[in-house]
Image 1 (tube, rainbow, N blue to C red):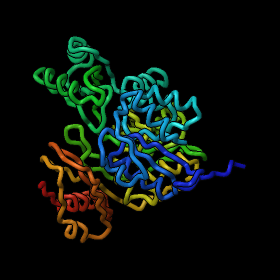
Image 2: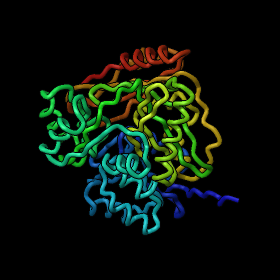
Image 3: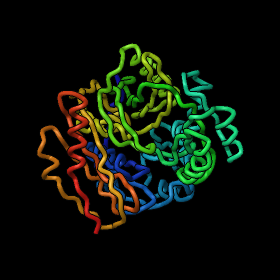
Length: 398
């Protein structure tokens, strides 16, 4: 018989405490799911009033790349669980925390490996022998130019080894793009300038995110999610993305292989390229994925609810998918610390629609400030509806 799961009550001496490292919109949904199960949540991020802080019991503002700052937070909070929601963290501190008996999600090794593209690509391609694109790492501009011209070839994709949400990512279509791609990659890394990965441009039909959950009863998969990016940043996603049965079997096998190698419990976002029945591994993140925001309306248990159940060793007997669904981001451009939204009464007049406004305290340039999600009779109609809802939400910058 499995051990009985116990969750202590917030503010009581036996409370179950979580340190959530990363307070953005994905962390906010994780915090809400933890709150629903009566877990005490402290959110750490580099700035105050981050979205997840607004729904947490407490907050800690500090630089998560500073090992001493992270140690101080852990020492003060004394969490039972540490849940990283971003890549840019001093992961060596998690090894210490794990040795002290704190549960790191999914585990310290996985967080360290997946925080940069070099560790995870080496594991996937060289250790596990998974099908990946041809790639080369470059530590300086000279190595970068050699990788582009002589190793990988043009066209190719360039990414910082440590970034998220498409930051620093670009496509080199001709030699004229080389200098700008290098500069953009150096400015877009979450831990500053440094090493990049140059990847072969695969001739694929589409890309999917396969949300993969390692939990107390085994491994479960959500229906595949398709998405569209602009400048490397997610704009819209949909579920289920149609694909051949044989390709889906291969995709699930690859996802299980990489997540088994990483270990631990939690939800993983596994990114894969598909061409007919062939599947290539691209990336994996041991946390909810931005394209998975569609699951807020497409599934009975969203990716955030699934993540929390897996973390707390609660059962996941099934994942009910409600039919064709889509998400579309609400992205705003400007400068303000007094953002006001309107148009919600128009946006939500259609059936089977929802809006999430993230509550980000300010905007400087372009920023994802919300998301619209919708269901309909088919994927195309769901995408059109989600776009219509997102486009109806207006923003005033005072």
